[in-house]
Image 1 (spheres, helix red, strand yellow):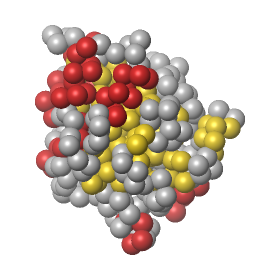
Image 2 (cartoon, rainbow, N blue to C red):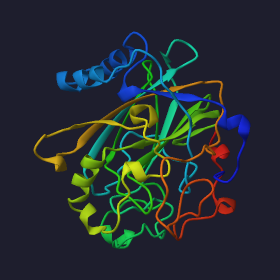
Image 3 (cartoon, rainbow, N blue to C red):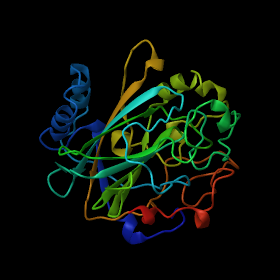
Length: 314
């Protein structure tokens, strides 16, 4: 991992997120979403994507990959491995900002996030803060090296879809999902190898929805001080352009039925980003650990010197 490495040439490179999971030019994201998932798309979902459209691309800097990155995630749509939680379907569209926001077919989108109690696969002894059962007490048969991690390769419309669960939280971070976009590599041995990491970022969740979810089982077994968006050290308050997901409940009166999340990411396929982007957007509680590049990882997490290198996955 390269959380403490600072390369100014990299931090100047830009990737963009187009607001709310649609498109900057010509409605491509909506069209791509509908074409890719025509058998699953409802009128309400199409309207949700269209309602968040933007007339222009919105620039967004990459941010830190955090201390919990691992190489070798599997190429798969469903990354839950039996982990308990509120279902979450993510639909992500990748676009090339250097070419009129055309879709980036073949881009590999990689995501990873914590479970309902704040634990990451590969780092299951890291303390999530507050009071939570041990990760092993959740009763799942998930592989503790691979759960809630995965790649999907974008179709001709630049669209990928993941099935996962709503993430929990750990001190001092707000609820979030990590993301990298790779190009130029290939699927091999069940994972994605080679190529370049073009974008490293994070997705965020509305406070009201997150707190409603965290009142449900199994999330409610993790108690403590939850960090809201305005106090997070990474989220900078920019809404969809800063990674805030557009969320639609599967059932309006029952949040336990799950959510569908939408977002569009624009990248420069010629850029390179090693995950050393800055944090910002909040100050962690006094004495609390940080996954910002200059902070200290949560208790039990590896140091930068011992962590896998983000560049190794490119």
